[in-house]
Image (cartoon, rainbow, N blue to C red; front, side, top):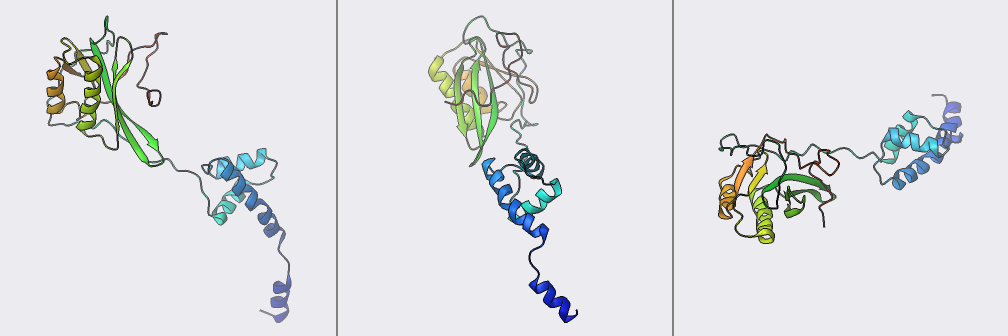
Length: 220
């Protein structure tokens, strides 16, 4: 390199690109912070355009990498229904007819999960098909049979210790095919009913549309 080239590069001021990056970088970080730090390059680029910044998508991606920020990534899918192939399955006594003419004729139960900042919380709840009321629920950091039994104990406490003729319907998850689950139902005179794997739906709502298990509405 010629000495003149070296001294020219050393004394040269910031380029137009560097000046533009110095202006846009903090603005993009501020927009990213305002949107709960979840926006990736595409959404942040569109947000910057809406806020009057003339910037390209690739430029936004480059400035995000330079600032050390990135969008939120979807976590791996949580599977709540894990069947036990070796366990005997109770018969389906409901046949997808989720109707009842009186309370405590048909209960429907299932597991779901709620993503939280501390991790995944698993929930089991039991709904009376007649009133669509949640009669028992339990939240835990695991999906073991004990959480299902705790939800059943709450339902038992609120509805009575002897409920002859009650059917408790669930999917074919291993928690509902366990011996302890069947024994706990037998203690109150109820019989288990098991449908397909992961195919459980709650009774229809007042408008006649299928009503799936709510993931948030039951939380106290």
